Image 1: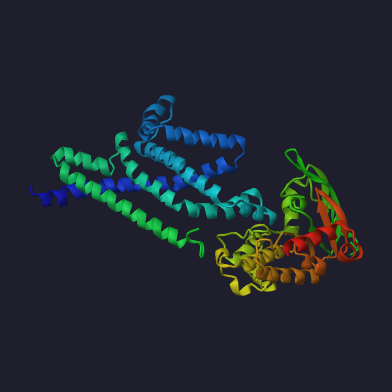
Image 2: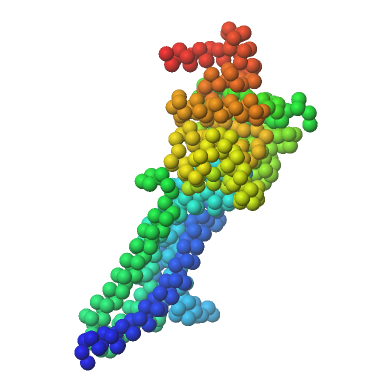
Length: 222
Length: 250
């Protein structure tokens, strides 16, 4: 079997199957990672004593725990107390937690950068605290958080490969299985790497477009 | 309610920051359509006083009544009173991510629950009142300070307030821009809007104010019409202060 036949008939179909799983992991995790990140950031900034403390503990826990360990806990430890997840579910939950924790830090920083007068003006018009947060502060903060959030999205693309450690055959896993079976480490991993590079490039371009689309006229460079 | 009754009553407001008492019992009443100008040295609590009226700052003691309803201690009801007590800030505080017209209409939609088309129409009307209709689609960062302040006046007007509080509305502006903002304010006063203005613009105070309240050390020390304080009474504290201002400028 020559190289081309191997690539076209064995490697690419296998990687494509893995890629589909990788994309599923990302597409399911990312939106919840952002939503939960917003929730944690708002909870920490405006939540009052107890919610703020809980959000802080959550972020500290996730930051302090290697993602792989978190996935192992979700998949291998929780069944012992009667909570069972499939490998896909456990991976997604782990990714959402990790993504949310880091996203929340970007968003929290962005919230703090919004001028205090904005919320005071909103309150002076009769908006409630939460109306001021959702209609005035967050739209500004999220714009400023886009570069950080896209960075975190890129991390997510790459750490989705850890799902393989929970037996889920995603892109890296699919590559590993083929490479071992056919002893084609070089070709296989070059292709796997190239596919991640494409995913990351698409994300970077996409984030740039979103940033441009939501840029506030006249406020560039401020 | 007859026009002679007070639209806003402020009774014995006290406010402390840490150990320093910024307001030491301030009381005054405002009739509908009156323009009150607060003057006095910096740090005498003028801005704090305005913020105590709409409870952006909560005073330790004292009461505020709007049309005989208590604004202080009103709990969640404060969000209703804040619609009725507009505020204009020294730094404009326009919402940076919204165009001029969106700045004016957002509270109409989100707070008053107005339909978007109706709110847009009202917002454009208010922008026209301050001469900013042509700039409706522009963002705060694209406006001059004077234009931004006029939009922020339109934003306050849109809520149909009973009173508007102006907290040093021209202090961040150069003389030319100051003039365009003061003109809008003068027009408002002439149209019968009730206004409380903290300012150092003595020209405005003399020409537009019904009453000047001179504040010092957290108290109102003198109060009267511009003529009373500045012309008839040679030894008034207000006159000394204003004299000092003019001398200082020269």
